[in-house]
Length: 185
Image (tube, rainbow, N blue to C red; front, side, top):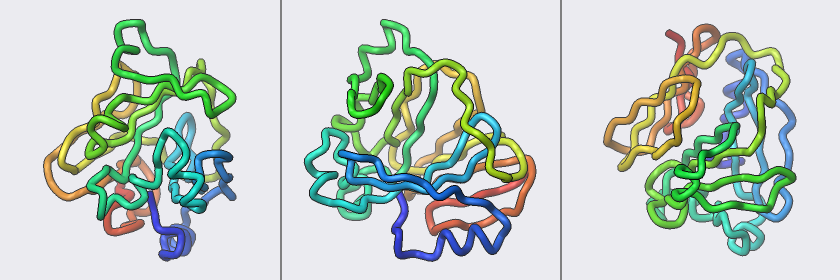
């Protein structure tokens, strides 16, 4: 979650990172812009309609107000299909064109990152001119994300104030916000 009034978009552009135009999420009260790489993207998300966000079962308004609510401002979205055993920890969300499974921690332990699985096979978003590939995510916060089995970049966790470091193999390192950094290995 980012504050739309902060200078993160200008900072990214000045460092050579390309954001897409983003989109509004109807019914969720949120809007985004994304940094895209082959097979993945970093979504910078904010609440633009607080009433709509409060009325939606995802309650992204709580995550947007993370400094007050204690909810994690970070989320991890995966593509694929959960096994029946893994689905026990998830609730189906029907607010999008495809099935989405949201980890129960969204309600039960919001201090953990928001974890969701888009029930999609091998969907690859187009790349928008950003160098490198995702190598790792380094998360700091009061509690780690509880993820299903997945293939992809490693995620490490340490206890502390909310922060996420996105590690790439090329590009310009940048402190995007006080809580979000792009680094290069």
